[in-house]
Length: 494
Ligand code: UDP
Image (cartoon, rainbow, N blue to C red):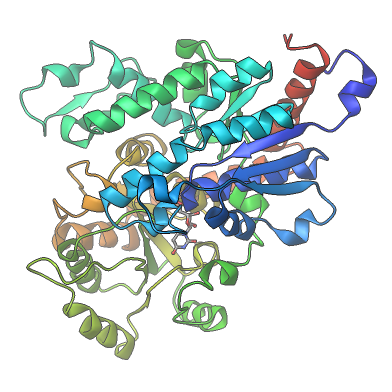
């Protein structure tokens, strides 16, 4: 309950949102901003000019008319970091060097964003986990910072357990030996080769330190998905405020996928796509997408293509990125493959952005091959679709364990080694492994049916959580109340 002066508690909160410049980070944070606006709070999104349209396309315009949602762009230091104008989002990058420059440019925005916020002080900052500076800045202003944690709490638990100086991986003889991560609610196994590399882990340590200085954490997901791990995390980290407010994709399902795809060439219209899916049996089609950041080598793409064809099941493949003809496999196989798939009506290959929500929501979709990006996983669970997991970098191997070892709603393809997104496919997963995993999910066997049943139970929980009175709905209420209490009591909260 909000105490203190009534006028203060009724006044809308003034909340600033700062994302990390990548589609998988911007879309959910923008949707959280919309949730605040929908409750009458005043929202400003701080970003850079070339990222404005990424925020705008994530806003469900039908649901925001009359709301207070502003976007304020500060200049991106393109010249200073040596980038051409307009390259301000990781989806614009195809190599590590460009990505590093985008990262450096974003770090340089701190001063200008701080100045803007000092001149127009907010009641709260909701900032992506990678905007670490916002924790100290919020303390300086005497306001709360909420961390937008783009993954789940299960992943945070694993990250903290692995950081322990006693973690068994430090004593293994081989990178490929499985070990049990100690102390967790379940005996989760992983190998050292699947853990993030040193430089990435250092950044994540800094993220964790900034998180501990923040007021609380907001997550795209629903608490029923990881109840035990939320309690575990609260205990080990001494945290009180973790708010799961999603699946955001279920709340904002009307985002127009055509808007998302307008930048690239749509291969089929939505109507053609739906008619194609309507012509297939329930649970018989596999959907493949590796999100917006991963750049697989030609060799890996070729293995995936051969594996899909060998499985014999129809498929939809969102093939966002094909590298230059630069390895011994090259990409000359692709036009033939595309032509054959089309001629034999085996599938559809999207050379660009696919309407993922529309696809996952169709009853013909029986499985989703994913890199385990957190948005993709939440979307699969929201629609009760079992997953085939092929993680590459970041937290993706941890999320794979949530799926295969805790929720048991999917199978691992068998990726063995963590690599950066732009080096993906350096250790290719074979076509045999791809075909085996696809068959395992689509063969209607007992194991597959078990996964499908559990995925559908998750779908029910996900859908209930976002209804009025559901856990995510109530978490949003609690988060806003806590922020208003903080403001009304000048920083003192229970
Ligand atoms: N997405 C989509 N169509 C595509 C590829 C991706 O709609 O062809 C969306 C997908 O629904 C998800 C987001 O882009 O919401 C990707 O986020 P995720 O966390 O899965 O992966 P990331 O891109 O951050 O690695």
